[in-house]
Length: 406
Image 1 (cartoon, one colour):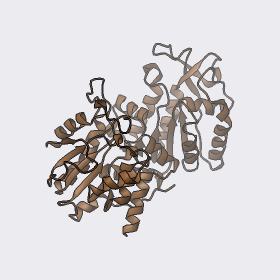
Image 2 (tube, rainbow, N blue to C red):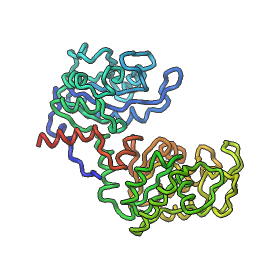
Image 3 (cartoon, rainbow, N blue to C red):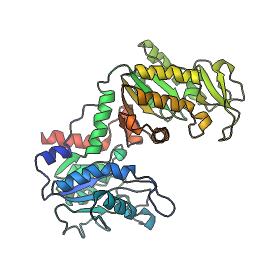
Image 4 (cartoon, one colour):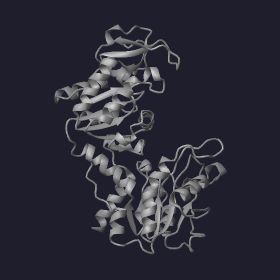
């Protein structure tokens, strides 16, 4: 797994006074949720993008920022695709005007941009060729700037014109502070981690995370599985899981991962008790059972208290923790105790912890432990692909550009 990455950082350029009077193009991740009226309902990604923008402005740059928002059809701009609400929120956070520029790809309206001024370039994904990483589009974007800065880790696993192509052609290509922090944190967790290294990988399906499980099985000391994934592992060791969600065709894969871990003295802890219900419902009655007592009509919807305490003890002893996914249906409080126990154990642990994935972030918010996690990843797919050991295209091109420069 590639974890030691060398790339140019925005802060390096600022330290060398390289931004004064320069046109800086920042690819941010401003893809925030909105209600039906277009109001932003959660602005974490906007707030996370502010440090890069502020730093470039304070360094005297002419700053252009863009992002995707939603899933627009290329070439067919609709009002719902507009970054206008983002521009308004960004202006509030920066304390200065943020003009939204339409039809910007050929540079229209950008000639008069002044040092210390910022504009937001309308939704990048409405341009033909953005998702296909079209070279001609990337070259047009690169022509707008002296320095390209990628600060969008959440899209780093995609090779698109604004995340990969532009970095090939811009005079200078650098990583913003958010992207750099993500890569530093992941490198710390997976490159030379403090031991024991414990990973929690949970979710409904083994198939969606099989490659991650296999990659982690080769390097972690404890691999905690949860949710529907745990059911498949329980079946692999011969336990009855009733009518719980399971992938019977992947039982052998689960058994192979258990064996792979055991061969090097590592473990996949199997639950000793579970929380069951007869139906998947917010009003379902929760019953705690030892795993040997699961009935054929039971659905397993959480780990039991004995299992939670067993895992909490392993978390307390860990040196590094990687967390992806809640271990039960935590949206229903009666099936949330397992996730809550592990979340609080991570919060109180002295280990370096890194957490990522949408449901994980929701659990962190629900149990109010945001400031107790070592690093919270802003990327879902990118976080998972890094865990798998995949090279992220948008990062790889920055590494290539840095290598070519040196």
